[in-house]
Image 1 (cartoon, rainbow, N blue to C red):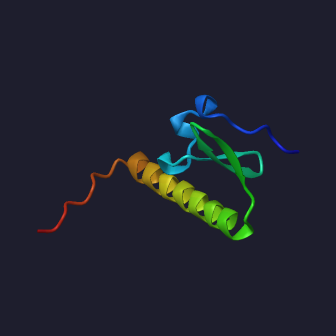
Image 2: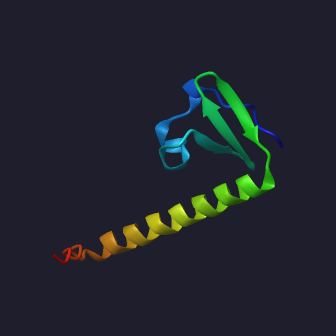
Length: 78
C-alpha cells in the first residue's frame, strides 16, 4: 500500500533519517523539502538508505546497551 506524500510541515525532526530531509513512510523513502516531496524510486539509492538506516539502528542499540550497563565512557588517549 502506497502512502501519501509527506509534506515538510508534517515531518518531525525525529522522523528524518539522521537529520536529513529523507523520511520513510511504509515501504517508501521520500525526499522532503519545503517546496515539495519526491518519492525515491531508484533501487540503488533506496538500498543504500535501507543499509544506512539499519546501521544507525544497530549503533543506537549498541549505545543503549552500553548505557544500560552503566559503564563510564572510555577516556580519549592523548
